Image (tube, rainbow, N blue to C red; front, side, top):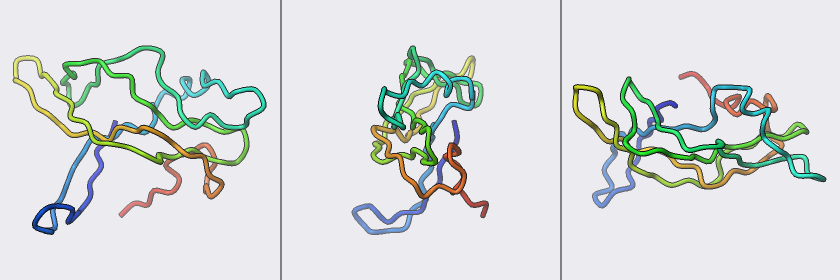
Length: 130
């Protein structure tokens, strides 16, 4: 899980604002990707989900609910799958002995597999360090 930052003026006053949100594009555990089933006759599985819902952990705090997020999948050819459609949800976290807080989170609803990938299979290959 990571944090996404952006500057936007999408508000009633058209004022520039900084927004932060949690994002969880793909699990870090590479063994999970090996369990993704690609349908017979296809070369890609654009999305996949974990087998069971899990609580999110952020800064030592746990989400109050369990979630089963959708992740971008994999291809057998040189394509990579990236988020295509998403929405924002609010996640509440409880911290042991410290209270609770809420964070907005990018929730992937669909992914698309495309050919313009620098490093096939690495969804982060297009990111640049600022």
